[in-house]
Image (tube, rainbow, N blue to C red; front, side, top):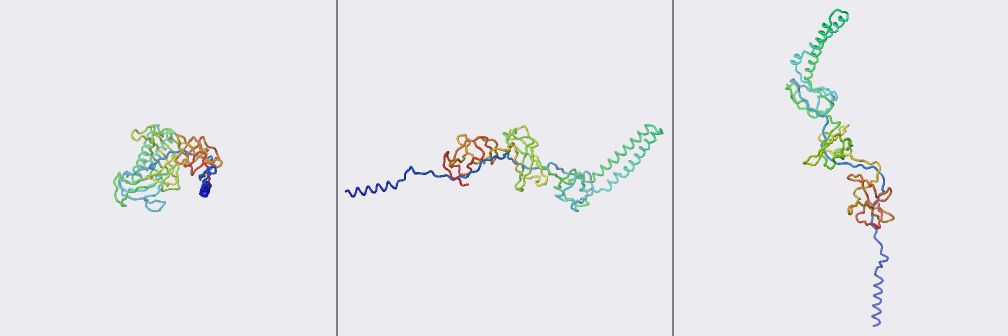
Amino acid sequence: MKGKLAAAGILLLSAACTQPDSRFETEVEVPVSVEDVSLKPIEEFVVTTGTVKATKEVFLKSESAGFYRLGINPRTSRPFALGDLVARDQVIIYLDNPEQENAIKVESYKLNLENSQREYEKQQSVYEKGGVTLRDVKTAERTYIDAKYSYENALIQLTKLKVAVPFEGVIVDLPYYTRGVKVAANSDMVHLMNYSILTMEVNLPGKLLGKVEVGQATRVMNYTLPDKTLVGKVTQVSPAIDPDSRTFKAIVDVDNPDWLLRPGMFVKAEIVTARSDSAVVIPKDVVLTRRNRKTVFVVERGFARERNITTGLENPGELEVAEGLKVNERLVVEGFETLRNGSKVKIVR
């Protein structure tokens, strides 16, 4: 009997020795990554999309009938073609029409102008010497003026046999005609664009009315130009909201000095509505919302401390902390999801 009790005592003692003592139990360290809180600039912007269009565009038609002849581009030494850059007042198409040119009688009007000018100057000289009356001078002046108008009108009629471009631009459409074929008046000749400055119309949510204003800087990007960001600005803002879409219209002009963007391209635009050059800025995705409060975690002496913060400017990736964080504090940016205030942490940058 005594042997059995001794054996039981040994088993109980052994079991007692194998039970963990809660007094020595340690808390598990949560691995986290941190970054130092610092001051940097932040912009608040509205993201929108739209299609850019040329600010200068013209469809030129023939003003007179004539035999078609495409001009030679001095830049390429070949006939003008799609994509060619042309200068203002450059003639790109001729409508040869000898019969009409003869009917215009430019040289005849020019000679008449020269004769009437000499006669007018002669009458002025004689009048100063008392040889003719003022009426004679005025009659000569009127004849000279009429001759000048007739000559200028003949030149205008002659220009209708040419197609000249009104501004520097690029040929984007050039209907084909066989050289020497007679083209009727009002026929399509050329489609010209200048897109060194582009414009885009955007529709913005009504809640942004009053926030988006004329003059605000805008960044414009296109997926075909991943390394290029163009600069623009808001030039017009409608004061009214469309009752059906609940949006309002704004116009953005885009500087395109190298002609990289092309009319018709679909682009993304970021309208900068506010900016701070020096603020406490943190990643937006580290902010937790708990009971209508925005919180983040910082690390102090190996423990996580929960901080309530007040935010200011924000954009899709970052936000400004107006209150709740100080420069150089260590902000938890990874591993914060399971933290509690006072959790022990291990920094694994």
